[in-house]
Every structure is written in structure tokens, then in C-alpha cells.
Length: 170
Image 1 (tube, one colour):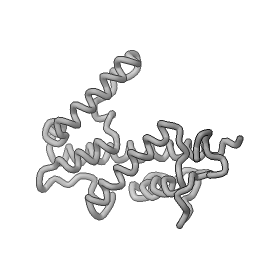
Image 2 (tube, rainbow, N blue to C red):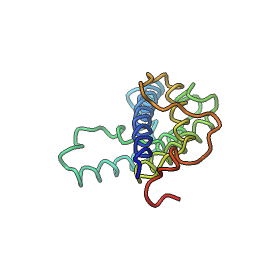
Image 3 (cartoon, rainbow, N blue to C red):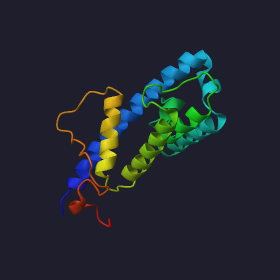
Image 4 (cartoon, helix red, strand yellow):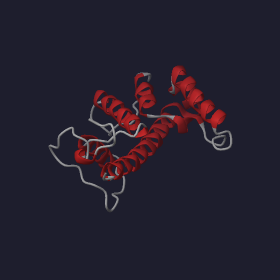
């Protein structure tokens, strides 16, 4: 059995991590600009703050030796970002310029969360998902990586290497 799908997933995971870290950085900068030092209390809905604290607490409980130095904002995922966008007061614009409309940005964040979950469960990514990540890397002005797979325009929703999908895949 070939491991091409694993290579595609590793590439997707690298891109996903770079996109997540870049979006977190931009979101934090936007929140700081909009709310100053009170960005956490004023810019992050209480439900998201509680969810982030729960993520950190679970990690601290299981891996007590590794996460103590991480801040709460380092637990923000794409779903959390979408919820933060929805909870903003008028006049506060977050992640402007990533997509021309906030509705499109929210939809892409939800798609990214699904891709992140697929990767976490060891499911093969599709060419469309690789394309989504590649396009976001461009939108975020992230440096290109040598050897990275290029998105295939018009590709189907089949796994990136359908002939070598993971065991149990349709």
C-alpha cells in the first residue's frame, strides 16, 4: 500500500498550521487595535473564552508538563475565530482583507475547521482542500515552500491520491 495520501496530509497539516498561526496573529492584532488592553474581555465572547479555558485545562490535565506556558489565545481554532467574528460590536472589523465579505470569511473558517478535523482523524484530504489551503496561503502572503503540491484547478472532491486512500476509506 502506498503512503502518498499521508504525504498529502502532511503537506495539508503544514499549510493548515501556517494558516492558523497567521490568522491568529492577524486576529490578535485586530482585536488589540479595536479594544486595546481589554481585547480579551471585550473582543472574545464569553462562550469562546470558556471553551478556550476548557481546551487548555484538558491539555494541562493530560499533559501537565507541556502547556502551562501557553496563553489562552493559542487555543483559538477556526471555529472559535468564526464565533469571534460574529460577536463583534459595530465598527470593529476583524481579519479585513482576507476575503472581500465577512460571510465568505466565516464560511472558509468553517471549511478549515472541517479540514483540521479530517487531518486529526487521519482521513485523506481532497484536492479542493489542498487548493483552499494554498489559496489562503496566498491571501495571507505566506512564503511559498519548495516541493509543495500545487492545487489542481477544477479537480474533483476525491482524496488527493484516491488510488492510495487510507485504510477504510471509500
